[in-house]
Length: 153
Image (cartoon, rainbow, N blue to C red; front, top):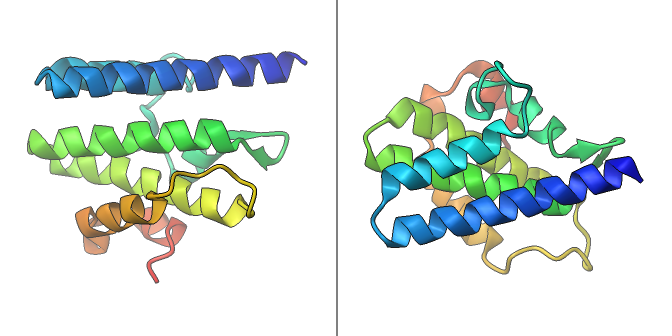
């Protein structure tokens, strides 16, 4: 029961952070949106550790996995946050950081599709989101573990 409560709280926090960040982006307050996203993603990791975008891709998936099962809702929110974080960083010409966020978002979206079935509630435009990320990511600029973690077909 405790794991479920923690998971539900994490999902709620990620959902609220995403909504807040999107509102800030629409108001043109991109620096504040970036901080909101970074703080939300930092809440998933232990204090004093590397940001999620700088950790191995497998960590992004592990942070959305409970007892060996990918939490669809949490993984979806984290993927959305990482995608928006990468988009904001790209606009600010922080290309390497954007690349790191984007590849982790893509890996999460791919994990979601791999774990899903016909009853899994996924966004109707998930393939468009993945195509956007594929276009934004230059595989030649990735570290070996990042390149291996994503299906490029």
